[in-house]
Amino acid sequence: MSGRLDLTELFFSSAGRLPRGLFIAAAAVLFALFLLFKAVASPAVELILGWVVYPFLLFCGACITSKRLHDRGRSGWWAALVLLAIVAVVTPPQSYPDFLFSLVLLWAVVELCAMPGEQGLNRFGPNPLRPVTA
Image 1 (cartoon, helix red, strand yellow):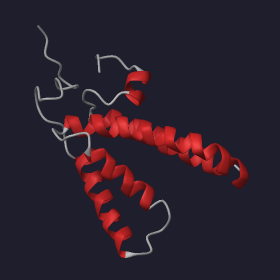
Image 2 (cartoon, one colour; image 1 turned 180 degrees about the vertical axis):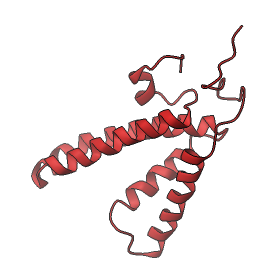
Image 3 (cartoon, one colour; image 1 turned 90 degrees about the horizontal axis):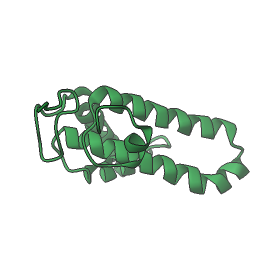
Image 4 (cartoon, helix red, strand yellow; image 1 turned 90 degrees about the vertical axis):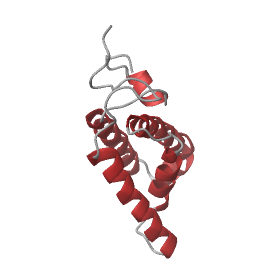
């Protein structure tokens, strides 16, 4: 990210790094949009519009999760596992795989929300909290 808040870059690009606080805020916005859609949409509307709304929210989630993983020095492809776990446990866990996905989500919360990003430059770009000045 270029140092200023660009919502298009934040939600629609997986390039670069994302600091912890901004990740939590962006994830909260996406979760609030999900809850709002679930609360407002009737089952028929959800069936029709869900094919647009849910992939949109998943794509935005993949972008912010990838950037946060980049800040931790990890590949953004790990976001696929995190998002798969979220989709799997939207309903209450009922089987052993659901329990495993719950463990993945526990790891994701610790990794993405509790752990700080890598200091300095990494292979995904400069530290978003302390950019290198020339």
